[in-house]
Each structure stands twice: as structure tokens, then as C-alpha cells.
Length: 208
Image (cartoon, rainbow, N blue to C red; front, top):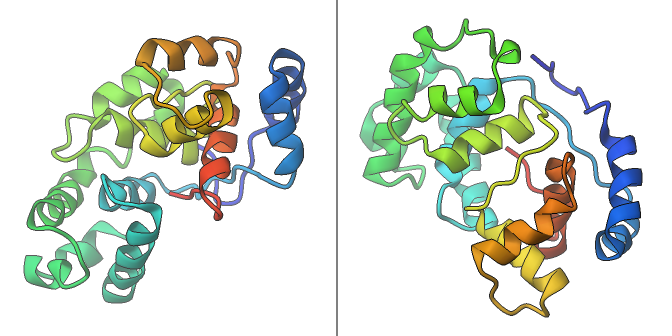
């Protein structure tokens, strides 16, 4: 598994190939040329952060996460299980999210030793969504931000959708079919394209 601070070795190649295939994306990549993807190297950390960030804005998620880290310290199962649900809720988590975070922490002993690198993207998604509170979107964030998989297209991500609509359709809504159609020319580097789509709608790079 990638270590903390690791960057994808395909990033430069991907940008070159994407630039050739997509003039719109080429201009966006030139504008945000300093954008990088860096793994935290900690699947559990990214999983908990992704669950906390579900269905709320990047700004709101950042605020809740800061409070959560202050309360918990190092993001480890034992530290999370040492506080009660009410303390987690005081950080800004809903009752349901607090339960998810506790449940994932309780189950992690069965997951922490898995050989993630040897699994395909779909195998990883299938394994992670067995955890209560972890849907496909959360698993895809793991694939992108921890495992640095190159060709992930999180079709359920609002920020990415808004970025595509802004860049390719003057901000007007697009169907799933239209979104997938645009993503076809990004293969096999859809992860890289998505990172730049996020950057077009958020002043701060997305992190998990």
C-alpha cells in the first residue's frame, strides 16, 4: 500500500495523455498546474474522514473534522472507541455518523491486515461497503486518496459533477450518460481528471 507522502508515479504521464485527448481539461490542468495527489498512507484514517464528510460541504466537513481530531487525537480505532457517542456528536457528527464511526472502529481488526494492493478496484469496493455507513462513494475516495488507483470515476460525487458541468456545460445540469460520455476520453486516467474537476469548484484541493 502507498506510504504517507507517496505520489502516483503515473501523474505526469496521465496529464500529458489527458491534454492530448481533451482541450478543455488541458486548459484546466495548465491553470492548476501545481495540483498533486498525495497518499496519506492510512486507509483507516481516510475511511473515517470520508464517512464524516459524507453529504456535507467541504467547508462543513473541514470544521467537523478539526473538532473530531481535537477530541480523538491520533485517528486510530482504540482512540475512537475510548470516547462515547455523545462526545463524538459534540464534534458535529450526526447520531448516525457517530454510530458508523464507532462500528467501523470495532470492525477494523478484520480489515487492517488485508492485502489491499492485490485486490482490484471492484474487489476493494465490495469489501469496504460491507461496513455500515460505507457506500460506493466512500470506497472510491479510498481508491483515490489512499491507494492512488489511476482510473476511478466517482459518479455520485457532487463536487466532481459540478466541476464537469461548470467546465463542459456552462454550469447547466448534465445526465449520468452525459457525464460518463465525457469521462470516456479520460480513461485510463479518470482519477487525475477528477482531481482537476474538484479543483475547479473548490478553492482548496480536496483531501481525505
